[in-house]
Structure formats: structure tokens, C-alpha cells
Picture (tube, rainbow, N blue to C red):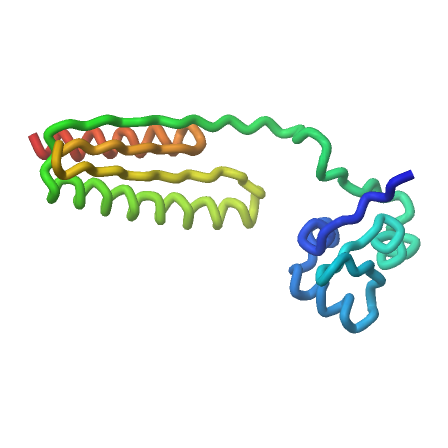
Length: 158
């Protein structure tokens, strides 16, 4: 029977350790591991050995199984014509600032709720035709708020 080997990141998440801490414990011999090439892998038996008697009844996660928590994402593409270069720069800068704000908020939420939202944007501007294409991807609420922001900026420029 093939035994599942966990990566350092997977094992660290399960053990609630930082991956660097787990690697240090492996190097110091506190936790047994297996070398696969230049990387460490940990078997279920090795993880249970580290946990001792407390780990006997713990069900280890199967990362390759289907995710049980539902995640909904959306992608929006906005095509805008007759966009001046300064308007493109302004929209691009506002989107970058808004995304940095969303990521900072999500990082603080992730610490408490393990939120898994990712938001991204890409702007493509063609100066010869003055066309701008904005691609937004992420959870529905974040994309919706970014679309509203783009709409407000465009209305303000008219």
C-alpha cells in the first residue's frame, strides 16, 4: 500500500508550527522525516511519532481529497474605449491601491478565520486605439466593489 508523504508546509499547518520551525526540528532530530531529493517529507507514522500518545486518535487531513468548504469566485472583464493615457494611469493606480487594501484586510481576517479569498486584476492598455481592458478575478463581493470603484472613476471623468 502506498503511504502518503506530507510536505513540510502541509505538516507544519497540521502541527500548527511555522514551516521554518518544523525544518529546524527535523534538522535537530526532534522529528523524524524522509528525504526526497533535497526536500523533507513526513509520513503519517512520523507525524504520529512526534505527537506521541496524543496523536493516536487524531485523524490526519487528506490534502488531496475534495475541499469540503465551498468557495465561489468570479471573473469580470471590462472593455473601455476612448481612454486617455492619464485616465489609464489613474485607473491602474486606484486598482493597485484598492487591491493592496483588500489583501491587507484578507491577511488580518485569515489570521482569525482562515479566509481563502484571492483577488487579482490586470490592466491592458493599447495607446494606438485608446482601448483599456481590465480583468478582475476573485470572490464576488471584492470583484463587485472593484467594479463599482471603476464605474465611479469613469463617471467622475465624464
